[in-house]
Image (tube, rainbow, N blue to C red):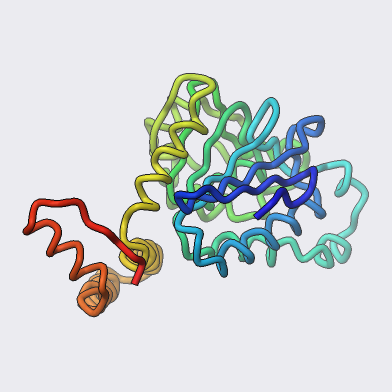
Length: 260
């Protein structure tokens, strides 16, 4: 896939890893409506592209994303905000079935933090910052942070971030479970691509079912989650990759997965 537009770049490598980059550096990659639409359209395309095994999302310029574009929203009323239908664009990313990794540098604030939390893995640079500052401008998160942040780091840490609007460091984010891994500054994207390459080499059906069951089970009773896991586990024994993977293990050679 070639570059989508000047404001959103997308490239699919030979390994099956797609790199999506927000490219509004002068606006600190603020999420305005056109950029949200482009993100939604891009993830819809990547979902349907069988070449794509894993996606990395990052920001060009000084930061990952500094939040929603307030210049676009400041004067709006409730009906106008509703008509923007922003939630539908978020759904395209939250429902994305392939692994998604966020490479975070600089600020991931407001909608930028929410975008990162839509990922399955977050790699953050040492100087990165995470926060939900909406309360400081008279509103609250609208892209899932009141729910995802609570689930990611627990009630008391999440409430402190949500109610004060204060950002936390990458180190603190890692300590409380909001980041999977820390890297030196300038290395988050490189490391995220390395992880994505590893995932892309794994059997695609097993990877997708693992993500599907893990996310579905997180919002279900334990017994339901365990049942979903067992059924998916059993289903994988009908795939060519399961036969190849186990045969390769027993024959002490590298597996040649086909995604079938």
